[in-house]
Image (cartoon, rainbow, N blue to C red; front, side, top):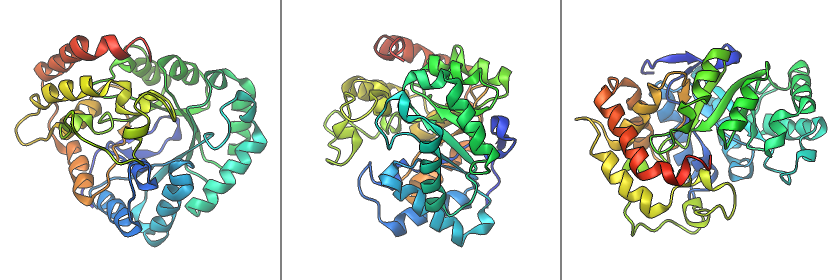
Amino acid sequence: MIPMEQRTLGRTGRDVSVVGQGTWQLGGDWGEVAEDDAFDVLDAAVASGVTFFDTADVYGDGRSEQLIGRYLENRPDANVFVATKMGRRADQVPENYVLDNFRTWNDRSRANLGTDTLDLVQLHCPPSSVYSSDAVYDALDTLVAEQRIAAYAVSVETCAEALAAIARPGVASVQIILNPFRLKPLDEVLPAAAAAGVGIIARVPLASGLLSGKYTKDTVFGPEDHRTYNRHGEAFDQGETFSGIDYATGVAAAAEFAELAPEGATPAQTALRWIIQQPGVTSVIPGARSVEQTRANAAAAALPPLPQSTLDAVRELYDRSIRAEVHDRW
């Protein structure tokens, strides 16, 4: 394994790699991925020093969890911390976020991942009122007491949801969209999390691939790819696809961002390096569908910090091209 910087994931007390492995792609919502190819991606991540996998019970209707479970069964030496999510398998009403459902969802994830105790379970972007419910956190505490889960956390869509969760003493970490096209969490969420000892997991770090600089206005994605069917929030929150940015706007801004990449780094690695050095970030979780992508993502951890001039240029690009479209919405 290649050594990679490790940071403590908030109130879990566990150290995880600054670049983790997102596994939504392995579930099939970005186009089909063969099982052997999925195992190769996970193996390349571990070989590159990744010690953190992020998944969810709805990625491929459990396929992502199952692949991770089978992989880790054969690689007990990998020492990987696995975070999963729950809640999106039911109608999105607050009444479904109750202990009995939590137990049922946890039991399925434990079976998929092949473990008695889940390392970390995150509420998967539930209705906003759930983040402020005493009963929900009491139920999560019960799951910890029953040793079904070792810790719990939240995945959010908005900064207000993040701040509500950070105020709860049992919340270990917050997973939130953060990338050079989504800067709002820098204002309040990251400082509040750092002050409370809550970890920050940065998701959608490449704005669904926009920040790789590889797409043009004419790029066509497959029919089973959410970048085709969810551009305007038709299937789930719009922020999950291209960070909620209009595609044409995003392509133009990404071309400008690509020019900020330092010598020897790709635009995608530059975006990941930008996230890693934001104060309060614990880990960033890019996805990958190939060994090459996985290795390149992990290599971003070894890049030198971006200079202040680059950070200033990212802010200027955001304020000029992106802010008016997304800042107040999320």
